[in-house]
Image 1 (tube, helix red, strand yellow):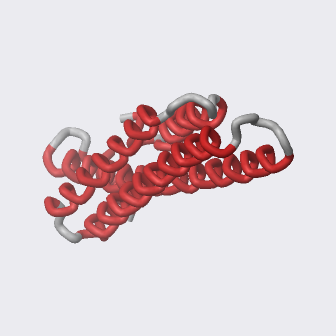
Image 2: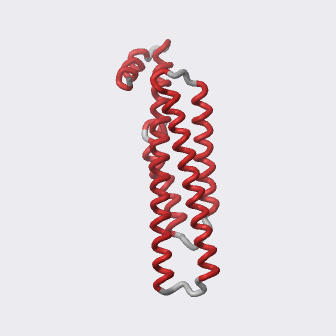
Image 3: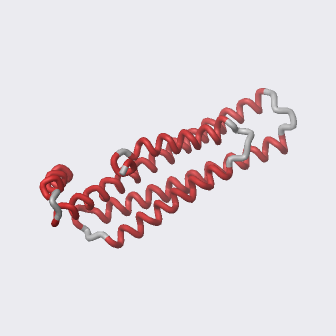
Length: 164
């Protein structure tokens, strides 16, 4: 229920963990962390696309769910590119910079780290947009279904009036 009500908490915690493990421990291999993030995001994308097929097209539910799937897919691709870029940077450092000092090394490292931070922020923003739209559709459908025949009909109708 937390992910439906406030997706920002999950996004902040997940991307802070990725940022700390990947950017602040830059010399360590972080493929496991970024691969796990990629798998989670691509799975959410697949689930969103599958859920789209089960919805009727009332209130643009299919459109919002498809949008969530697309944003999850783009976010997963950005995380994958992020991981590949960091891996290539680490291998280039090992090959070309035997001594890790000098102005060129510091400049290149700074540019790469800033670029990786920008990629991580874009991926986090896309994940937030996807979770927000998917959460909206799930909550709207939940209250619509609960209002059909349960004792919480007044609550469901009130929520439907708020969201339509």
